[in-house]
Length: 95
Image (cartoon, rainbow, N blue to C red; front, side, top):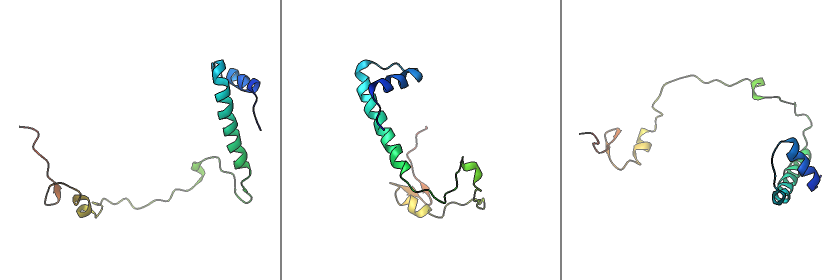
């Protein structure tokens, strides 16, 4: 499907968007690209895929809420320019 300039003007009017005459050709190209992408999506085989109106219909997998330090403190501190034990060493900023 390809849009002509009259259709682009009508879409802009219905959307209440002011489009100057020099912008019509650019907008026409962009809208045609969007419609071309939608046509590509229509070619996808979706047989056997149930329609889904949102993510709320899916059951969320829950994990146990456990407080940890992540277990990678040494890897993180390996990037520090200076460290003291298991902490970052920074210059004193308040006197």
